[in-house]
Image (cartoon, rainbow, N blue to C red; front, side):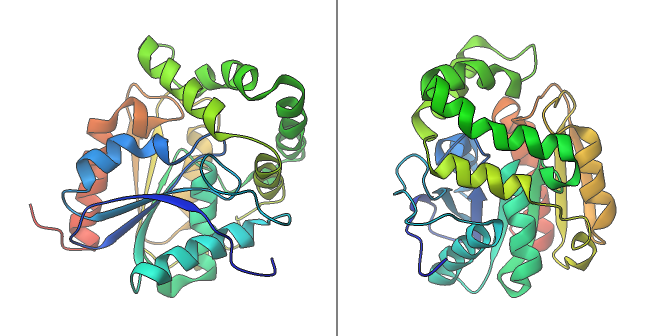
Length: 262
């Protein structure tokens, strides 16, 4: 990456520490609407549209996982000395790389329904790389209709399924999605997870069939300062499917790591 990457962000809240929210590979800042609505009463919430997603401009050149992490680091530096970083799925992988690469900027981590990367398994990496071709062939709407429902539990209400599909259809496009998929396909964070010093909360929906509970357990087991939580009645998007429970755990974590008052 030769220079600064511009991104669109949604911001809310005017007090407390900074909470940076990094969305999954098929989403945007809109995925954090339940967190922005509640958590902005306690912290300053910044949710990005990753480079090449939603309202963010397309990158001028391909981006690696380090580039995504460095872009997140720049957002923190522009606003505070450090931040608590919430990452969902691909956003969790970026958050983990950010914490390993820029430890001074990460006060704590919240990693939800994530993994050490798709590069841990050849088949997963191949499947991740194939997604860009599927998006190109199907178009964003059909791509979202095919993939979106799988991100939620079978019991998710219809209105949430529609919202997830709509968010994906309005957020993903090439080339940004292809760069994101390649960053996941090459990611294998297993060796660097033990070096992360930030206190970390790892959450996973009990019905997540995308990354799954074992992947979240691998993260929690490798980082020295972790708490691990299973979110009941939730699929891969636990923060959207069970926002009340999810936000309560995030607030509990922030009260411990950032001394946020009751």
